[in-house]
Amino acid sequence: MSITAPVKIGKRPDPVVLTKESALKIADLLSQEDDSSLFLRVAVTPGGCSGYSYEMFFDSELDDNDIVRDFDGVKVVVDPESAQLLYGSTLEYEDGLQGGFHLSNPNATRTCGCGSSFS
Image 1 (tube, helix red, strand yellow):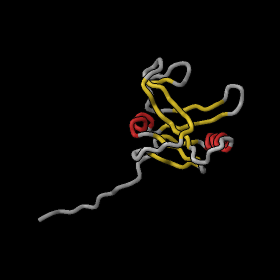
Image 2 (tube, rainbow, N blue to C red):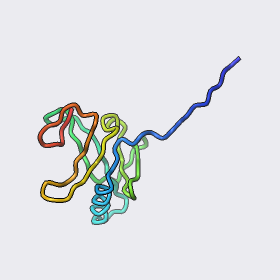
Image 3 (tube, rainbow, N blue to C red):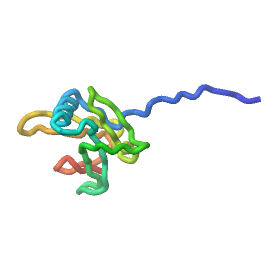
């Protein structure tokens, strides 16, 4: 006798989400590029004064295992290794003198003064 149980397979959670303001700013920056195949890639690399560094850049190369999400028409791509360190993060944008992009990562136990390095 075998017992069967339903298996719930859902979408992987978003490694990073964009606020409305950051999605609008990225969409504006992408519109200034002359390449409609570009998307925002968010990555984590070893290095920096706290152990890991954030990277954000426009890319056009997708890997089969990349995690792809859309936020208000902005395609955001994260590789699986970076996703493990980013789950639950929010990319924020604030205009002004002290503004710019800021990644709020609940997984970071320590950050450096520059805001682009964490552990």
